[in-house]
Image 1 (spheres, protein in one colour):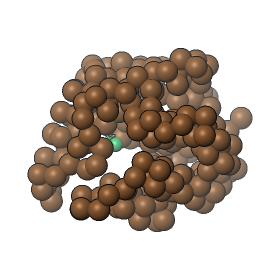
Image 2 (cartoon, helix red, strand yellow; image 1 turned 180 degrees about the vertical axis):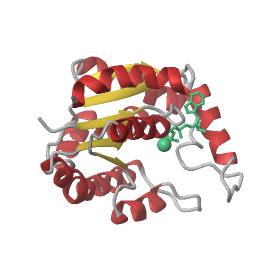
Image 3 (spheres, rainbow, N blue to C red; image 1 turned 60 degrees about the vertical axis):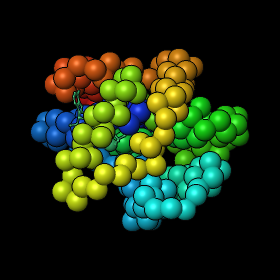
Image 4 (spheres, helix red, strand yellow; image 1 turned 30 degrees about the vertical axis):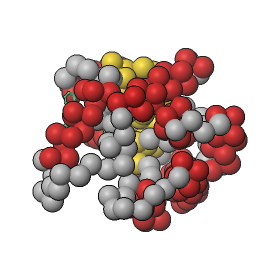
Length: 213
Ligand SMILES: Nc1ncnc2c1ncn2[C@@H]1O[C@H](COP(=O)(O)OP(=O)(O)OP(=O)(O)O)[C@@H](O)[C@H]1O
Ligand SMILES: [Mg+2]
C-alpha cells in the first residue's frame, strides 16, 4: 500500500508546522520520508503558486483558479509523488485533493460532483492512505496566519488571496473539510488544532507511527 499521507485544514491551522515535526520525527527514527506541498511541490507548481496567490491587481475567476491548482497537482503527482511512492518512500504532503474540494467546492461553490471527477483526473486517481485534518475555528487560524506573515523578513502589510477572504468563506471551507471527513471516516483523522504545537503533534504521532512501522 502506498504510504501517501496528507495534511489538510484551513489557513493557519498548523499544517506546515506539523508536517515538519512529522518529517523530523520519522527521519530521526531512520524512516525515509519525502515532504512536499501544494501547489509549490515542483518548479512548475511554484510558478502556479505565484500566479494563484497573487498580491497584485488582476482577477482570477473560481474556474480559472481551480484549473491552476489542478494543473499544479497533475505535475506534482507525476513528477514527484508517484516516483517517490514507487521507491517505497513515505510521502507527506501539505494539502492535496481535499483542499480543492473544500476551497473551490464548498468555499467558492463550484459543482462538487464535477470537482470529484476533475480531482481524480489530475491526481491520476491517487488517494491518500491517511489524511490528518487539523480542525480550528477560522478566527484563530487567520490570526495565527497573519501573525506568521507579519514575522516574515520582507513583510508588507498585504495578505494572500485566501487570507483576504471573509471569515464566512473560511467557515464554509472548515465545514466542507468536516463534511468530506465524515464521508470518508476510514481515511481521515480529525485533529483538534487548538492546543499548543506539542500537544497537537502528540495526536499526530500516535496515528502516524502505526501507519509507517
Ligand atoms: N498549535 C499551535 N498553537 C499556536 N500557534 C501555532 C500552532 N501551530 C502553528 N502555530 C503558528 O501559527 C502560524 C501558522 O502555522 P502554520 O504555518 O503551520 O499553518 P498552516 O496550516 O501551514 O497555514 P497556511 O495554510 O497559511 O500555510 C505559525 O506562525 C505557527 O508558528
Ligand atoms: Mg502552510
